[in-house]
Image (cartoon, rainbow, N blue to C red):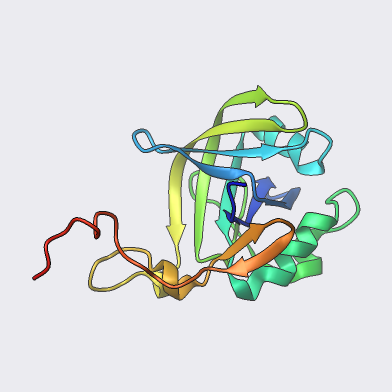
Length: 178
């Protein structure tokens, strides 16, 4: 019941053979050093690509990317070239060999630090080695990524949702009013 979760596209592989997989089991696990995790079923095509190269890129998705994100979650890279089928653009990685998704407002390049077998899924614990952000979503006043403008895609109980309204910044409940 810990929903909603981000619906992300994880890109993996290399320039000669890459794939996309839709993942909702993902999240931040450490600030310093920056780390995150994804959980993937071992029978998935992308699982082998990630395990072989020990790197992947987490690409945030938007409401406009919902169709492609869903499609990548129900079709296998064994049978389809997901880049060609969805029209998404592979962009060469900067700190990793796997591509990022050009249409993603923010891509997080990762190197696997540890794999934990949990049951139905294995958890890839990874160091964040680089972040690629679309300048269109950077607030010029603060330099921060503007989540509201990105209209990120979320997943809950088999359904996709767009990110809701901004309600406040961390600590707003105790901040003195000016």
